[in-house]
Length: 130
Image (tube, rainbow, N blue to C red; front, side):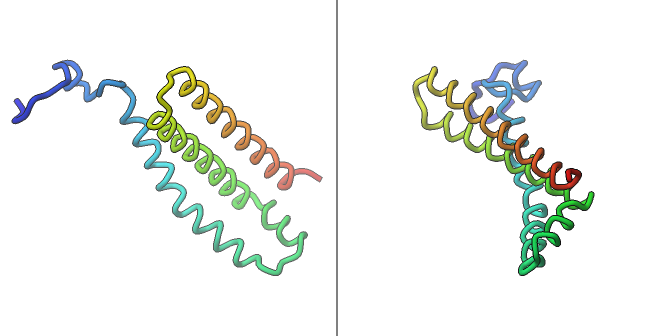
């Protein structure tokens, strides 16, 4: 038994679930995307600094290499996933009208998905298109 009062049922404590049933997954996903963004962002910034002064052909050749395009797709995916999760937390905390909250979360999810998809398509066109 615990020292203080508990507000979860015995089954909820056994399963480790809170009232919302999914807050831990959201929290972990947000932390993992943030962790993934650290090395990806360092790699990206170092690469861009290394390309300073390069012409269009050099940048396109760099972006067209398989490791680079793969890392860029990972960067785009992690960035937009982390952004969506972060905006969702802000909306849940500060928007109190339930219908507006749901609409805003859906809008943010679709916007991040559309922007991520457009970014990946652009990367693939640069990498494989002529």
